[in-house]
Image 1 (cartoon, one colour):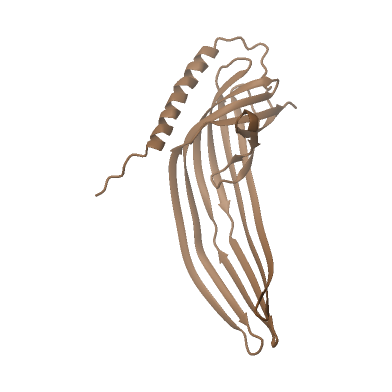
Image 2 (cartoon, rainbow, N blue to C red):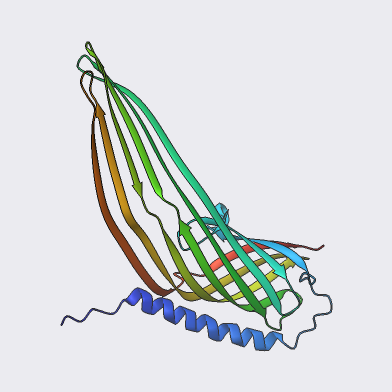
Length: 262
């Protein structure tokens, strides 16, 4: 039996998470005694939106958070009261790619059209428990669940070849089952309110994810010659992948957001 070497990258990530956890608890304890009369935090029943921030000072970029399927998502928050905040991430993605080309091979004219489409959708609801802070600092612990659905992959191609005798046509369609993703994540976070309802924050967490994809696959090719009868070739196959991952975040996420008071 061969023993695998320890993954130093994962070990470093776990140590970072533990260090951040101790720092988080220390700051929370120290801030609990501060006066919060003139708090800049949002009032209860406020809605908020959150983005990720990356880049250096000269090249700062704001981008949406990504789900387990690496799809951009919209992260919304609803502050229930001073302790609990509900959060919801929504990541719809419908992709369709179409390509048309015209070329010549000798005296033959070749026209090729292809279309590929697939949809991906996920939601990840969660809840934040906010600890005692100050009028600007707002530490919290959050837990998220995630469900992602991958739609069926559909590919269609049509190739027309025209010569002096006429036009032949080859049509090919491929249909492949999608899949789904499941996951859960525990996060430590802290918001710093620059102004009323406007904040910069950090989040760091650990969790697991599983992605199950693939399934039945159908490949149908139809050939229509210039003369004579057409032929159809149909191939059936199946393949399924199951990936499971448990890990901490590779780095601290810097967030930016705003709450809207109703």
